[in-house]
Image (cartoon, rainbow, N blue to C red; front, side, top):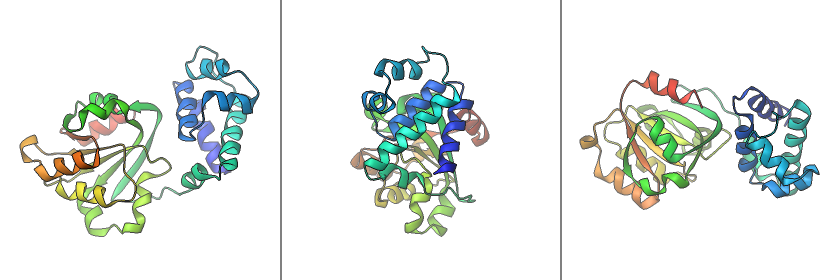
Length: 228
């Protein structure tokens, strides 16, 4: 767990919004401010002040205690989150996994990319997006194995799947439908709205997954996402 501890610490320390980074990790571990404060032997208002940046940015001692505490709480609960986070992210030419340093809602994600909403826009505000996975549809469909699916999530499952090299959107949505774990939302890139297969939209609606459409240069899209 030392590697994970260093990764979390580095993300918080290097973030332009350390409070948001702390909040993100507290929520990933599914710990309330009250429970965290009790375990750290501080007040819930102190946690709130750190997360909202009303208090001076936490030093390394506070971050170390924070990380040790969330990990200890998770171990007491059966290490469910730690087991998920222990999965290694391995490079692949079929997909690319990236995490955000802060919490992004589904609606903020849609707005930052100026994406067209194809399905379930009304639940975007409720969705949390901690990162994204960029997937080459052709390579995923041809080469990916079912038991490799967890790799697409890296350490965090609440993320956006962005499918590139899409011909109609049907195949990506069928793959998502059959997957044992669902992303927060799905994005297809490079199509015109009129070219999206109606079946892809129907699957998204049935699965209660927001489905977005983005166009434009992929490099610029990645550059926009790198700011979060």
